[in-house]
Amino acid sequence: MDMNTKASEFLALLASINPSSQAVGSLTTGWVSMSNVRTLLAIISTGTLGALSTVDASLSQAIDALGTGAKPIVGKTITTLTGAGSVQALINLQAHELDVANGYQFVELTVTVGVAASETAAFLLGASTRYEPASAYNQAGVTQIVG
Image (cartoon, rainbow, N blue to C red; front, side, top):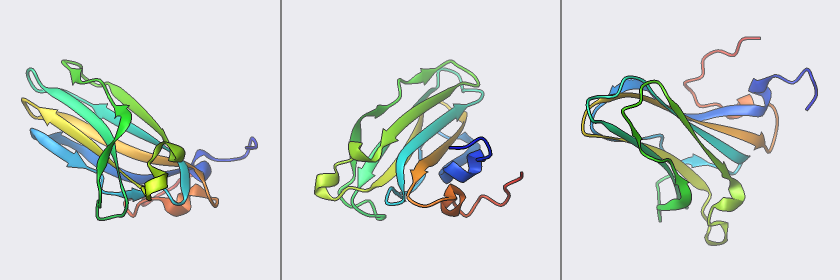
């Protein structure tokens, strides 16, 4: 990578769970193909947590965009966040960590809130794209890239 490469040229925003006061339960990004990226970074962010609330997040894998054969990805679960306000957690994933031998190539991020509603947001970034710029793989919600 040279000094003139912009971050938006090598990182793609593939999916997100938009900032909200998330009710107790789970939200997901939907299934994202890793066919055009070699690595993913899941970013989980919290704001104010409800009293005694917990926030968990994990990555799962599937064979297709419908979630066929969905199963957890071993080692891709954060330690439960409790009582903390405005913290972030990161989960790294490389394509070879999927069950590729059995055709798994889709990934989904799940954020689960327990006990009381809490402010959350989460993002799946793709890197090491097959073709550049990575911004070509941004989700439809990306409406601007400045600079």
